[in-house]
Image (cartoon, rainbow, N blue to C red; front, top):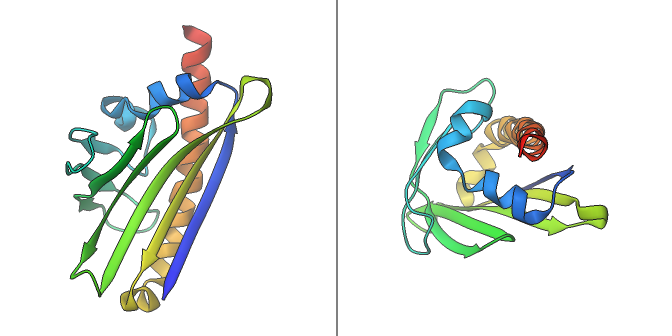
Length: 147
């Protein structure tokens, strides 16, 4: 009873520049229609407040806990409902590539019995990740050329 979304895009910028844009949560509303709101302290054990707008669905507010932060490499946050019914985590990964590029990867794991009923929502969420990846690539590459 697990489903995983694994989406990625290659960005023409080094991990340090990609990281700067990734953790600039105040700007997400300017370019990110999928997760237009992120508030909180990006520190392990802290709770963030995020708004997710999956295509074709009503906006939802989540309060994921930050599980791991490795600057220039990884952010992992997630949450659960009664620990057994549902657990999910979302990783943002920056993988260095050739010629100073970065592969930006998002991996979301949905776990628990309720996942059997979440098929349509997971498909729409995956579409949102791909949209976010493209918008993030544009944002980072635009910022790279203006700095």
